Image (cartoon, rainbow over all chains, first blue to last red):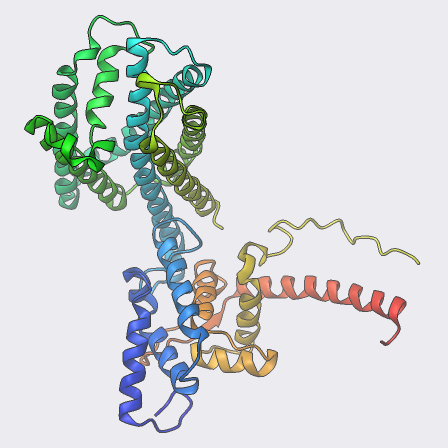
Length: 344
Length: 123
């Protein structure tokens, strides 16, 4: 029988069920767990009534994208858990705030990876010769201040979460946190050790006076070595030492592992509402620091820098575009987190 | 022509209008809440009821976006069901929100109709 009581032919029902199942794939798993069955029934009834609707697929696709954005903490309201009681709505809201913070963390990590590459070009250029051009000099000062503020905010944000993880692993034996914590530690160790190793080997860091310590400039250069225009020039890339090439391939994988593991930790760790509110406030400040950093880079890239080490090429233009995208995602996540905490 | 004074100086924030935070979902949300004011319904019955009293067909994606929002705000709740089609019902908070929203809409409608009658007659 159809939803409105008329007989269905078996082939038509099967076909409608197949189409409904395909449409349901637009939605994230949590949403499907909560609404999947009833939504499928509605779709089957709708397909039976309006077999050739042109707007249904678009409407469902749009709804699915909105649900996915909500699931990632970037919009609206995520689905409640299956068979939710009324009292679980706040818990679902806090879960979505955590999702917002995870998305913000991922955007911040992408911003940091690309931003470090741009910043290292400016700071290492300054190691050799302070820029005579005003835009490059201003960009170096602005980006240095913004990057230091960004890193300080990152440390402030990470510390209480790491404390919560340690407490929950040691006192409450939460085994689901152990594997992501181990992966994150290993990946961070690889990044740090590799950055130190390849940074030490860079010839331009000794004996010169720069705006930031030479060791830090070399470290940021080494950790962001994979963000390079050389990928578009395989001939030049082939002349690189094998160890450096391997590092260029390994370091982004290590960064991705560290970010994925950190995201899993934040999703699985029980964080009290006060800590979430604190993190949301830091998120707003981090977005401000990112905006200042982006302004500094844009100022440098828009004028093309100058010849020599300060020259801004296509890779830097692309870098600025990635920074702008990451900042947009971070702002949206911060906004969604604040709305979630306010109960809206 | 005499000007109507604003009553009570209500602002347009969420405090005065319970469905204001729904943004572009306020329309579907109002239709759904109005339908559920009559009793619990599942998705398909909601669609048919809204189509009947408002002449608007809510597409499945739009309907469930609004349902998810209303449920997360505690304005409606899902009922247990053996059927795959889960019914929803209005909560007390949903009834208050709907009443406040419709009152606000009625005030706007009253002002608009009064001004139309004063300036345009029955045209």
